[in-house]
Image 1 (cartoon, rainbow, N blue to C red):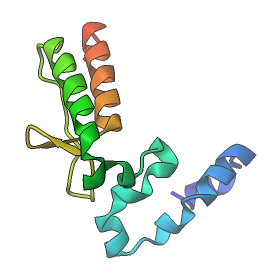
Image 2 (image 1 turned 180 degrees about the vertical axis):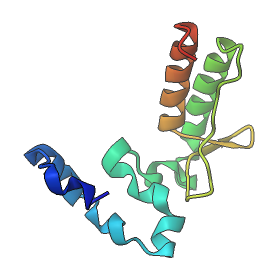
Image 3 (image 1 turned 60 degrees about the horizontal axis):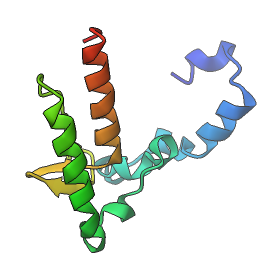
Length: 116
């Protein structure tokens, strides 16, 4: 990918963004095993907010998930994956975080629009 970029000059904005996570291009297996921890540059989420001492917030996530499921006849919810170090509050046995709820809302909207 970097070789293909030789003819392309990224914007100053994108160069600065990539500098925030350029270490990932040489990521070790340990870092890959916790890949989700390093996505805060892209999503803004940090695992800290989902640790056990923040478990009181799980009720809010459960409530939002329940309301979204009520308007989703297609069962489009995709929980946070644990395979690459995913994090979230455990709701009905699945990891749920702000991203999973945002993406769920988007999938419902796309489904209602007939896109999926």
